[in-house]
Length: 128
Image (cartoon, rainbow, N blue to C red; front, top):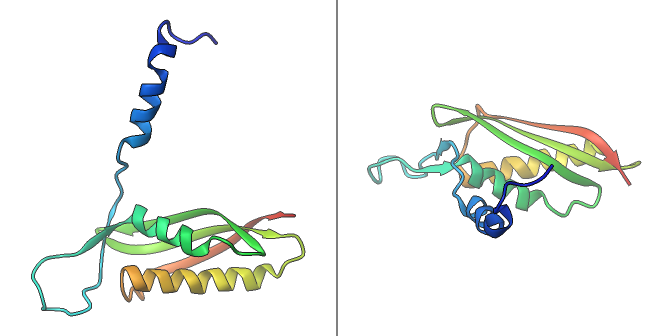
């Protein structure tokens, strides 16, 4: 496939513009730690939540996070789904449990107590 004429001249600028374009996310309602203390609503983007989860779950010796998804409806967090690849012969069930607990702690820290939200951790692959 041959690129459009003149593409090489603008390629770097186009790619830079795409990379710096802000990505939209879905707003998630944050549970007010002091209800009635201030007027207004506090929200956090689902992109911010999944980024924080990615950072918190990084560095596991027996697993790698392969995907994180947050689903919401009308600002309420419904579900966080995390896919893992576990190291060969590792305790996949134990790794999934630790990831779920760490995820719950991050969600509680960022959004507050969202007892209705489910956290699903699935081991989808094995690696060396």
